[in-house]
Image (cartoon, rainbow, N blue to C red; front, side, top):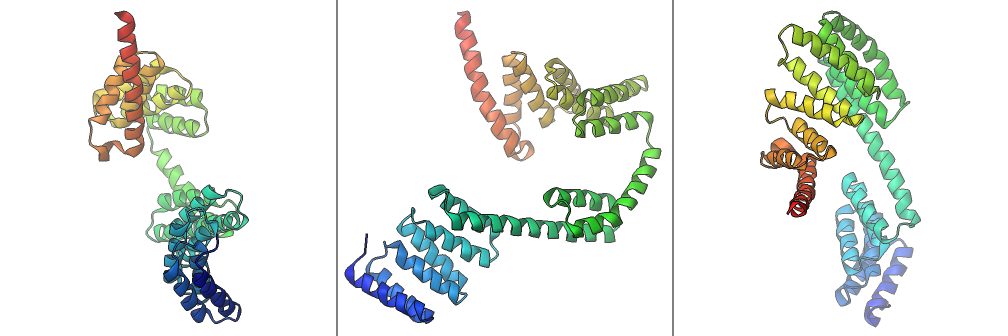
Length: 325
């Protein structure tokens, strides 16, 4: 709906100034229109467009937010806000503005195009950040860290020539270091690392075999509660979980918890395994143990998961009690 007649007149004057390239004069007219009727989003949107022309992105940001406030369904307001935030290098904020706009109109071509461009820009910045980090790590002699950084960068932008150039420098050094390091490993450590490699390749049965050989060797040497044994038990539990061997998960997680009673990962896995074999009271006990621990130690993901499990398990336990009455 059109706004107040005087406000519309100011808008029309502003539009003439805009077309003539006098953006400051246009801003003044749009301001006069908003002073009369601040609830017409087009006044704010046009004002934001003028601020973009004079590269005043702070005021463009403010005008765009006022546009959205005037009408949350006016999609151009989100586009104006995202444009301002992108210019201010607030890429995360720009992304959120675009998502909000697409929630109003998921088919809007301008928003979709800008989101695609923004995604590419963010990826490019992330890759550049990884490369800078890799160069610093290489200069400081942290070849293993540099190699891992490049692997992360490659996942973001496979085939990037800068990443490949750095990889050609770093990978040979890393492989020589790895070869030297592995030559000094014990047979138990070799089995553990082979298990890790198999797990990464989703070869869970093969990984279980190597972890089991590692644990058998440690058992023979009386090192069944060593750090290496704890890691092998934890990793084998992860393998058992992948193939739904819940009894195996419970056994290995219990071995971990005998050494480290507050191991969050083991408690969560064991709770899930207890639930899988319908031992709901035991699952609930592990979940409550996790929720009683400091939030910073548990972490948001585990806390939220255990919180949901607790509600679900409480209902199940109550239903079982009612059924036994």
